[in-house]
Image (cartoon, rainbow, N blue to C red; front, side, top):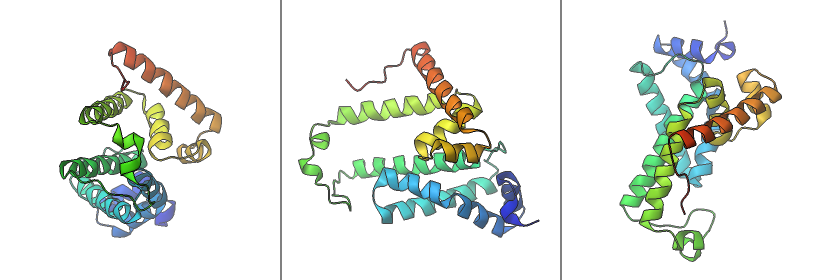
Length: 196
């Protein structure tokens, strides 16, 4: 059977068993979504390429160490690894206290958004992000998958429907229920998801 028609889990299994070409198929299959997600957050192509490579180095290591659950959510798992590496990058950048203009020429020193931010704002924002990421784990798998593909990968609902083999209406419904459930969880856990 040709590797390009195998499921993600079959390719993962083949890779763990020693078939290097299976990993190449997985990388090719999800390169665009993972790279686009990283670029959207980092806004620097060269840095995004580095983080993309680091993501798949970590994917390879995790697969060899048996840290991937065979649950059919390979892309969401890879995006989570990429997301964590992006967060690590920003944390390191903050620690080095460096502020630089990005490649799109925006002058951060003249931006109200950056000028008004304090360390406290950053801590609060980071805590809100962490709380939301933790809440997403409480969602049913189908809702969690749609939310991650939409919010973190930036896929359209048509792409999500194709990826998850459901209708667009089903994908929209899952997203709607994911948001309803997140609101309930916020109330249940008495979280304040506001920076003001």
